[in-house]
Length: 364
Image (cartoon, rainbow, N blue to C red; front, side):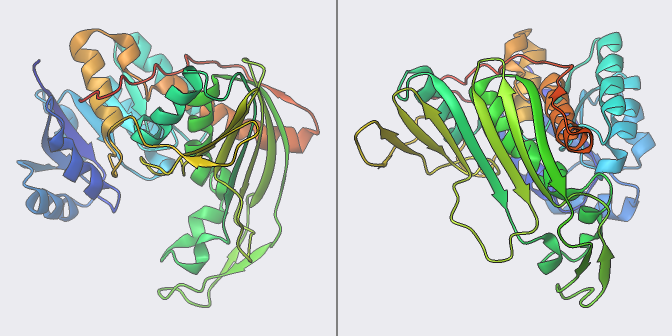
């Protein structure tokens, strides 16, 4: 199999793990990086042995680059993705796909028109943890899934993040920050979503930064910080999802549990690639389950490798972290807020294919 040449736009903190991992995949070659700050791109290129440090325009103009990984801030995701697609290159973007539904649809439309692929994080659902859970469900260990619960409970980012203001502005909040991990995992395990409803609120209108850099500064909260949602899946399963920045005293709730007709499955943190996994069949106690699949360490970039594999082989179902999946998740996140504002269910307008499971011992 030949290789796909990769360029990265955005050389901030998250870029390091991609630059470390991309060369580990046999059919990916990281050849260039770019940033609005050229000196930052040059520093990353030197740190990771990348041949070319570019401006954004230079990277887009390079005819040798096949796939661009977009690691810019969320507000720039759509603009940069569209530039990449218009330059004739496939694009893989960090979560979320875009900030608005309109931007997300535009990205998918331009990709279809140009015959190009769009991929999006998170790709954690391709890791050994959630893939093992998917195999357990498909093999009938818990019977037919009928319900699920998912909880992302934290006290907020002002306690540790050096620049936490974004998380409390429009387009931020716990749903748009962490919701993609949980919703993507749920869709991977249960299939596409039919409708959502929920309640969303701002528990604390003002937050005080206690991290060192801006200690004592105040943040005016502009977006809901506690969202309690309900999801109806086309499969018939019903899930509860709570995302919050308002849990000051901690919690012992599980990240995700799936409840079936013959037992329950405890799914690992969807922001990780590994375990642990526990299963409890009717009449028994919780038991740990060994992982059946690989990619259990931090394997960010796995979704890029799968997208490249699909492009090289023509096997469309190999592209699992797809733009269509990412848009479905983006729409659901907005749907919770819309449902809360209107006091109704939000009927999903999009759907997506349930990502095909990875074979055991699969290597990219």
